[in-house]
Length: 212
Image (cartoon, rainbow, N blue to C red; front, side, top):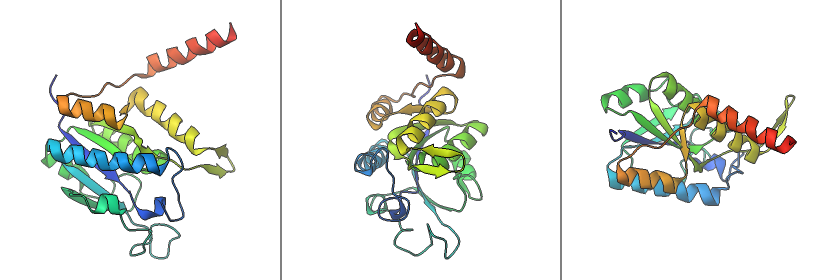
């Protein structure tokens, strides 16, 4: 197997998700933030380019208002080296940025996604990567979600994170822990992804067992 040509994409690790108006709940940041740092360190040691992404909202917005403390990168990311920086205004890192061109120019075929949020910028970037013919890896213990409630219902941060992780692994990204990814990087190997039919068949088999 040809070794993946990876880039580590560190998405929106900004104070807004720690001390601002959108606190990440699951997995807790005392787990995910250290893993983001570990992934950055592993990437740097392995010669994997690190792309740091920062989200900016319009001036006066309740979140990600540029220049505010909440908009700033978390110090654990800001203090580490990076190979490319992207300021974005939409959920996907690709939209309205130079990211796709940078990826193509550097011969990248696999994006490793860490950062926030699982169900918004992470998944949007992962899906677009798939549509562009790129492979993706999603580090489930270096990403995170927050709870939602609206007219469609209520869902916890844990439910959101778990559901999106399962869906991504079925068709769009290899979902793994930071430790599993580190092992694969050091071995020069890719990570396995599942598929839609098998994911569905397992779920149906489990449901049938519970009914029996």
